[in-house]
Image 1: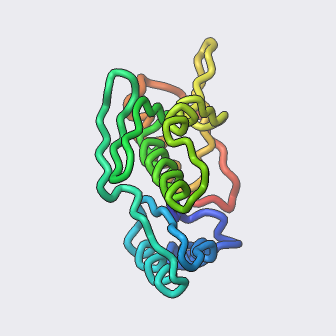
Image 2 (image 1 turned 90 degrees about the horizontal axis):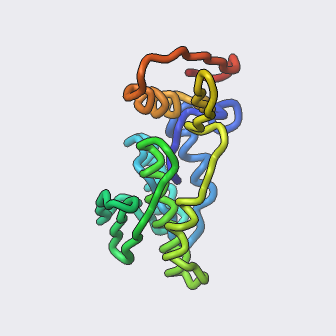
Length: 177
């Protein structure tokens, strides 16, 4: 779980607890599930559901140290040191990268063939069109598909450091943004 946010509420539920319960349906007995930073109400549900399912939770940030280095980030986890990590743009993507790396570590620990050094390179090569995507031109554009309150907060945090700009915003009626 990278996050549990209010999104797709018609399908997942209208509270963080209900959404967490729905997402917890992926938990499996004896398997590790990596969990990012969750709101306390979602965290409590995930912990309860994991215990009931016999799944092991790995807190993504547990024992992790992040160091900014000249060539990207160094992310030190209890089991591995990932060098040269370049997450996608946005502070929230650093957290997503940590969840992804911890997930790959858990997969390797479960016996899957995972090349952990290649993971940092893979993250560095990742592009996600429409997510803090800069488009050169006059004027230059920044495209983002923020479509839930959490994504809107992440976008606002990123934009806080930008020079003055014009914001063109569109959203569907079912989005609480």
